[in-house]
Image (cartoon, rainbow, N blue to C red; front, side):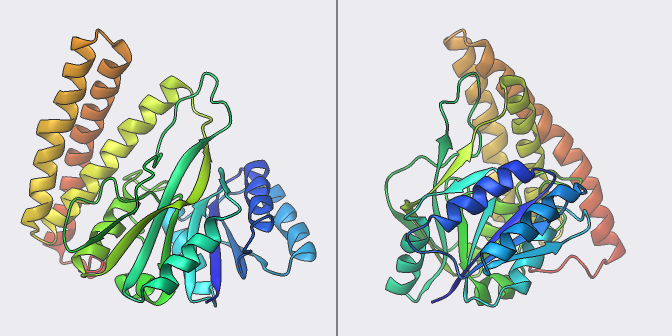
Length: 308
């Protein structure tokens, strides 16, 4: 099996070069490294072009500022390999990660998606971890279930044919769009709805640089909550999905109040602030996305399909 790594990047050439270097040091190196530049910094292209001269697997594409999801989809479409590993420019790929991903697909032809652990990189001094996957227990899913806790878009792999058949990432979700986040949750949910098997392989590890301060992390959690509200609103409003409504109620009645109660019981101001940011994100996300998708449904917009 051949594997392509797809990295969407936006004006972070130093982080990106470190990510490419980690791939070059893998025990099993990828057959393709497709960098999709969604930014405007010319030094990104210059750096990637230098890498193409040293390593023929590296390719450069420009996506024109259309958002991370669209950039990843462009990279997947351009790949010639039958497996895709999608990661971010601020991540480092463990030297055993690609080998474990390929091995997991080879062992079970039914597996269409493999997620892996996302661990913090560096000593984290004064920084806060976000979007981590810390479990060391291998798990698998098939059939409709809650998509949280399954994987993160910083470490997610697919059989390319399955990724394209499902429709890839929803290009109206994720960084660089009005809905900010939850493109990975939406994709995982659609994979499960399609009846495909997902395996979480903890030995396929990627390290995520934890560069955010506490205040930045709180704002990012609000973005995540807003994205989750948009993802669920889409499935509720456009697809009349009762299970998505159930997931929304779980988020509203369990997650945010639970965080707030924990903060109050432990007199933890940070937990209380996080709960407020998440509640704000959910509320604004429901308002903005609900109106947006209602408008699309009433207009009969053909771009909103069962695949997205």
